[in-house]
Length: 73
View 1: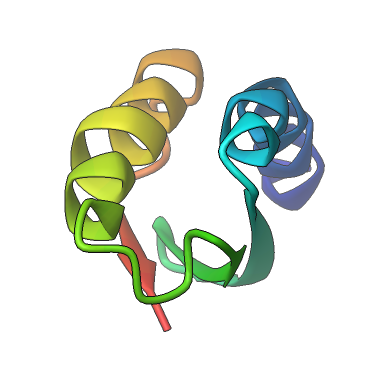
View 2 (view 1 turned 180 degrees about the vertical axis):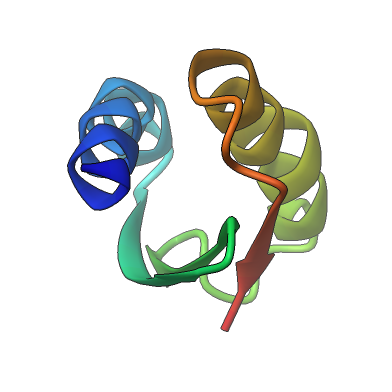
């Protein structure tokens, strides 16, 4: 259930990333830690860390309280 919820929230975020030529994919979820991989323009972007923590992690935590942290792998 958690995986489905995370995927749904990532779908809400995805258009904003794609607008800048990037994307994100869910790799795994372990004990509330969501692991994602940046793709396209997001991969190697100097703002990726900020996007990850303030954008993706913040939004996921707001929507899904079980999410403890989001990390890029």
